[in-house]
Length: 478
Image 1 (cartoon, rainbow, N blue to C red):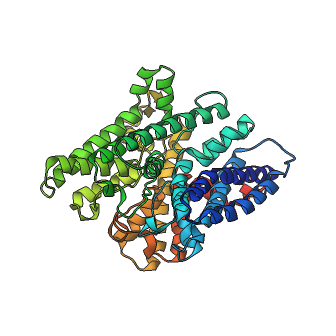
Image 2: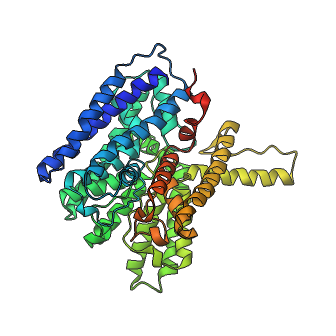
Image 3: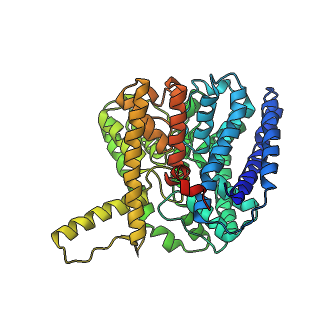
């Protein structure tokens, strides 16, 4: 392996050790005894990180291939280390379950094997939620903010980690871009925490809920979930902020620099908000006969639409019991996902727009072969490279869903359970339907299935190619 890759992996391990300190502090404050789990994890991880970071590469130039390998290995490394405090508790039957849980945290999936997460000690429960916040904006984006790197290296890492068909820069230097992104992210999270506190939610719960909404993750601190607070204020507030975190963060940068007109003219955002409005109205009409009042129906529909399309995965109702039309709508929202450049998962709205426009352009070309057909997004022509990569991504996505569902069927569960479990994991959502519905969990699956689904979550979060590049011989050559 390239020495430069090992050097950066060491820095990633040291960064994770630093990120565990808040959870260690929480463990000491609550006195549940779980501080020892963090110390026992942080010391060996720090030694590993220090050792790797001392490796000096002969060649300082970083290639795109190296960037993809660093991202893939880095996410696997932080998951292997991050699972240790969870495994040290008595709530997981195997390390594979703890690994699944922490991968679900870092990838902001929110799928869990725990029936009662409140049984975890406070420090570990805080770490479980905090991984959402870390993974939402990207672990490597955080590393770039605090560790000096050459700008070409930074861009390769961002291209491999930032979700969406096009990874761009806000400003010329990626370190400053990382600081801007995390600055916006932190301020929005802090505002949500303050508003939750104003709604009567305790500080600990407010922090964990904010981490889940900001990272569009979905881990709750109790089996009752968001519904346990019994507050319309909390539900609407989280619903609004999930949408805000599901919007491309470039839009917030444009607003900050005064380019409000450009921000409001974003085609992707308008389409994203339009899908939310139409889906909420459709589900409300479909549910109206089965819920007590129109207000309750609208509230439930809005919250679940916001939660699913942003791939957060919070649930206030058992939508397993909803009519088939509403359930099918939620599954479609799972696939569509949030905006590119947001903390959300799924195919991304921009990809869906490109695929639909590409399909229509192909129809027009068949009707009129001599015509020149182009695809435009955000008032710009989409180049052939982006078009081809989008189509390739969609094809790979479909093949992976089919193959993963087939392999998961070896555990013996029904098609709806397995298919929605895979869709939930590859789109980084959390709940599926039937046996993995919002009021159930993923603890039904065997250890080998835990590994498979963990890999599917990583593939979905890193948008397929970085993980598969690890299996390519050329990825480890010079």
